[in-house]
Image (cartoon, rainbow, N blue to C red; front, side):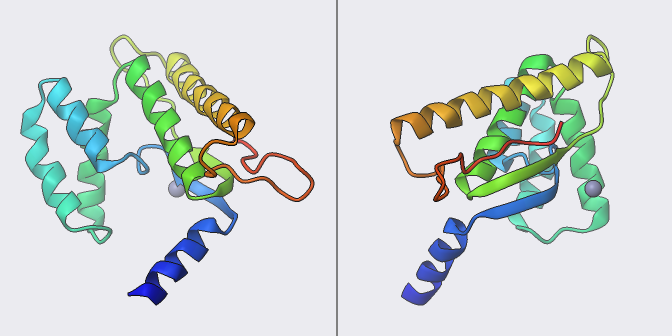
Length: 158
Ligand SMILES: [Zn+2]
């Protein structure tokens, strides 16, 4: 399917604006599975795998079930920061040049709403630092440059 591959490459290369991306809805399925295993919550793997097997089409009930699982897995500063970083890098990889990342501050045991926001910002800063380094090195071409030389990744909403 050469034509499909070319079309996919063309679409990936197009600069894009993402105006409504939820942090918790943008986590890679393999990241969720790794977190479940690392946190000793393997009982969450079956429902995660069942929804992941369906691809992009799942019911509203399944979406809310997934968010319940995600909230159980994203309870500490390091995890939230790492996820925010990975999500920003994933969007940059798809040549998203403007990203509005949404999330609701959550407080849990050992995590205030303020710390949650700090973790998200920490992850975003980490990703932007990595993207800046990649751009300086001109390494892998996932970060684009515009004709006037400005960064192809303009940041995120805060
Ligand atoms: Zn929304």
